[in-house]
Length: 127
Image (tube, rainbow, N blue to C red; front, side, top):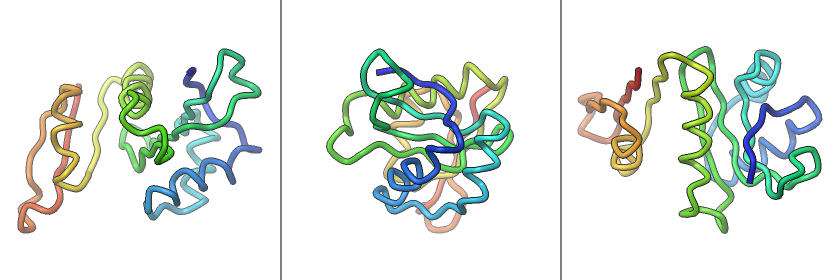
């Protein structure tokens, strides 16, 4: 597996991965991420140009708008690798997420706090 910036031809495949994780994100946000190098994809195999997209991460500046991995490939470190790649590209990264994935972000070194809405949503920061 290899992580690299997505290209404009891959918007449908990226949206497919994000939709499969039931994440709501605008196509325009994904395209803007592609333009500034903030939409990353994890692809199968060593030849990153021809590999199948296994996961995707969309940054808006330094904020993770979405990160998702194909259902059959979850639990294999792909999401972790995508976030680590984002951290390599930004000095500071933030994210908002459901409380059930809080342990995932904490394991990656994010400082996490509840957003105070009944504990359903959290915000994480890693510098």
